[in-house]
Length: 234
Image (tube, rainbow, N blue to C red):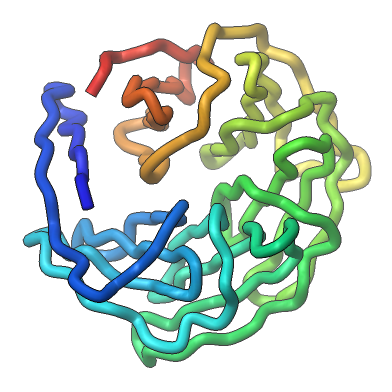
């Protein structure tokens, strides 16, 4: 398995390979967990890549899925959506503390992009405008006022606002502290990004969100300036 690591302090890149031995996985979902390790999940297999590149397999992954979205919060990895023979509304949690899996309430509709803000996980569909808020404590979903965006690419947020970025580069903003039923979305403008699949995991660092596409182009979304720019090819 080839891994490309981009160093955000100077935008240099390091490429290296790791051996997965008998671990078989494809179209993996990946998210950062504690200690700069990565949790990876796809096709009945879950494993953790540690900072020193050691790989450990996670047992009893519950569902054969590829292309899921995952996010880390307080010793837990939350996994939403994905595909098996068709798109799924399945959701689950893996406890890094106990090494156990738990099924969550199913999603109201298939969603494939996630973000985290203020003890809640935000989900948006790949090819529809519906956006949901998953309450970690209550284990339930609230449908938000629909954003105009269609074919979502990126979800992200800060302490005040929540952002949806379309595949075509249109950027939408909303104040997530407002009443969900009356959530207002504002179009901020457009930036040119690529209509290719995302790879790796989205990273937030020093007020900016970084993401890369399958052609290894690295982009930066500045949460303060609310602008996207291409950084480099990694």
